[in-house]
Amino acid sequence: MPEFIADFHLHSRYSRACSKDLTVAELAKWAKMKGIGVLGTGDFTHPFWLQELKDVLRDTGDGLYEHDGMRFLLTSEVNTLFYREGRAHQIHHVLFAPSFGAVDRINQELESFGSLSLDGRPTLRMDAWRLVEVVMGSDPRSFVVPAHAWTPHFAIFGSNSGFDSVEECFEHQAKHIFALETGLSSDPAMNWRLSRLDRYALISNSDSHSARRIGREANVFNCALSYDGIADALRTKDPAKFLSTLEFFPEEGKYHYDGHRNCKIRWSPQETRQHNFRCPSCGRKVTVGVMHRVDILADRPEGSMPEHAIPFKRIVPLEEIIAEVLGVGVATQAVEREYHSLIHYCGTEFNVLLKASNEELRKATTPRVAEGILQVREGRVTIEPGYDGEYGKVRFSEGEPAATASEQQMTLF
Image (cartoon, helix red, strand yellow):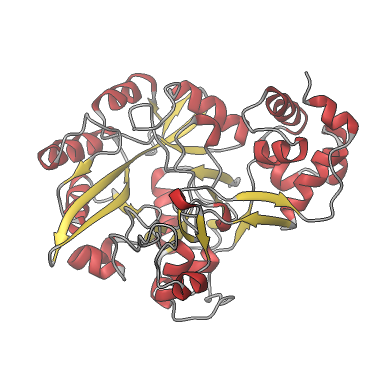
């Protein structure tokens, strides 16, 4: 069976703060450029997006759906709002379903807990355990994965509204949770510090709000290209079938460090404790980030790796590498031209980032861009950590040469 890359968690144009250009055709186009084999649909709870999915996707008969050569798996993200002991909890979850029939049954049940048409990521006034009951009641093969598990807001382990364990959140339905999404601000190594998470498959997805950002995190499989094949690989954590994840450098995630964005305060956990969790500028409590929260709950030291852990590789999106080399913004014509040139020569973005040889890269692009790609592969980067909703900034290792004259000239056309 050939390997394939999958990104399950993304959004449609019906979710807030998402690109209005998001269509199934646009997602399929970018997925092929990225080198993704299976893409989540996102937002199947939204009636307009669901109808669009039904209109354009072809049932392949194996729990996946196809459009223009791209395989799709039916997924959606929802927010559950509920109270425990007088405290409000808002937890995001990714839902997986094997058929439109199962989706219809899920939506029919969820409509009584909140409007499904206001947002592609609806807020539902229901307990997390109840959500699992509804999803699995639609089809026993459907399942729930806690989304971006460590994000301060809206996450199972989040510092602002989360819990200390899966069992606390899902109660008697915790036995049906077998995977967790690590989110952009954490990676598997951080999660390995908690022995209580050893039994869960740790998955990574883009949570993308635009088509060009899909695949910024993803999962690598060598299993049957089917819904059941993927679900089984995750449920069993079989390293022969679930090969690895592709990860942001977690420092680049927008909640890695603690801080207060409005006052430009960015702190490590140690600095936060030294300041008694209070912003020195305004006196408000800072947002406790993912690194700090992991440190609080961890029962293992940094560098721990449990037996049978699924490995991972860190990546930086190709457009960000090119932009850093050229010294321009990501959304510029110079970056777009160089990106498409590399894709033309090397096939897909993942092939550029992970597989293309030094010789191939230097034929396809300038020496400095090629060097930037190799530096990221080797982890030779410096990162200004993200905090309180601000993404971190990736820089290449200090002392590396600046862009050449020819590369600087590329930005002029």
